[in-house]
Image (cartoon, rainbow, N blue to C red; front, side):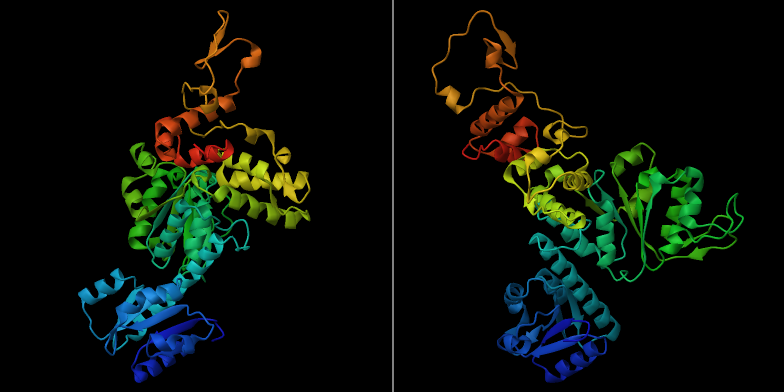
Length: 486
């Protein structure tokens, strides 16, 4: 292995080609191992895992493409780059369709080879980190991207695809979903990672200072400008500029940002000449950007420039399975920070956490866990340690309550119908004889969901649709009320 710890497996039956590639890789700080065919891979690698695989299209009488399934099973995170002497669009398309990361032609072009191998290894690093997150073994910090839900897996996949490019990305999602973390992840997994990552929240800048903050200013350009300042675009040159709350940017400044995106030049306030910057722009908003265009809060031409690749971050309440993972992860980190004994969340507390709507999303969960750890101690977080506000399901920003008239549950249906007294009160479709017969709202909700599932022949997804709630919500309720038998 090289000092960089990066290993490339070369599968090719041409010994001269093996020698050439080994020299090219070593000159770039990478190690290489060579195999003439699939039977030689184990001997070549031993216990090591390659960060990239260079696979010959034709290995004697063996078609290299037939090895791709085997290689994927052995090395699921290692990108495969095909190499062939047949240069054609059809061959390239076939390689990509089979799952190749990229495609090189022989003889190898030095620049193309360098770029391709670097990007393949960058993708391996990203997949490795994401796999650790999925296994819950990543302890890099609670500010990292944590989640194993299908919704977050989709986000990870987009990050993996877009990171090696320089296209503009727009991240949309509710406040607290982690938009800046996604932008930082894209930067970290790109070739720009050695460069600066500059984050700027447009909603926090006074309108009169917005242009100087973004594009910089010369000394004496305005009152208080006692020295020249580069501005966010200048500071982010060679790296990534993250513009949060892009719809809050003044319209006049949006026109200047559009010019920068088109020409890659800008002029500081009070400056006499244009300057250049190759900063990559990643923007974000917690609003619907298309609606912002209609409301004339965002220029349509700028929107299309920024929204080349959109990433929609799901709210925490829709991330199936992630609430428990995040809660335990954050709890342990704060316990370590504050010298507490907490090791996890008990079952009763977890049911409360998973039933809550989390209008503040991940940020709210982090702050809640911090408060709980500071004010309590113990090995397990129990429900009595949780603040009262999260026991109330309906919160600002949460989906509206569904109006329904529930029927009694299965056990009540099995009983003989009671004779209803004449003096009664009717509430929500129920008839009560006395105060002792009042049914709690929790019981009403439980019975309504149970009834809906039965009427939908056991389909929780269809029941959720008809009740007007998300599938993630109904599965949380099924777990909360122990309705799995329904």
